[in-house]
Image (cartoon, rainbow, N blue to C red; front, side):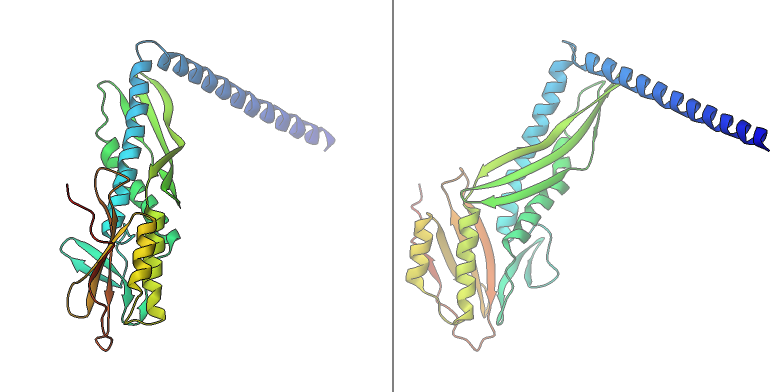
Length: 273
């Protein structure tokens, strides 16, 4: 009995040694392969192309991040269409921030998540245009976090990329790359909150003077106009953070029992060039 136990113990030890040997060998081979790949992609003929791929990836991230700001602006803070409280307009939509007595405006965090979602779902449209003969590029799913700050919106993007060529492979891409875009979105959201929440006090009235003062403080413009019966279209916009006017749009829908607010532009429209 003792002899059998001793034999079993020896077999277990031998098995452990074999497994360890296989693991160590695989690790050494893998590390050697990594070293060979690093040396290969660091070569003077290869490195410029790898750097170009990295640079184009960053350009895509900046382009799609900027694009996300304009898309959610035209759709009142949304990239993904909400289930309700919206007006369908052809292939797009405009959200309702006030719907017959109920405030339905998204939170700032909701808007941040919609910005991040847009980047994650659309950056591939740009990345797929990056192509180099004899190079195999594999783009993994991105992860984006967005923070709306005063005077800027920050995107933190992780976009892994695997580059393969002639049997060698390396991982590059964006590793929590920080992209800061000058924007008045924070001030625009604050003004939208102010205007929308004024309905809680009186859905028939809002302080035009207060609105003008608040908008002028951040060099913003507000246009309020009739859309349909009992519907008011609101656009908060600015033209000093980019060459293209930035607009943030939403709608108020009234019951018809209120006296709907008078259309107004405040402050006066910026001069046209």
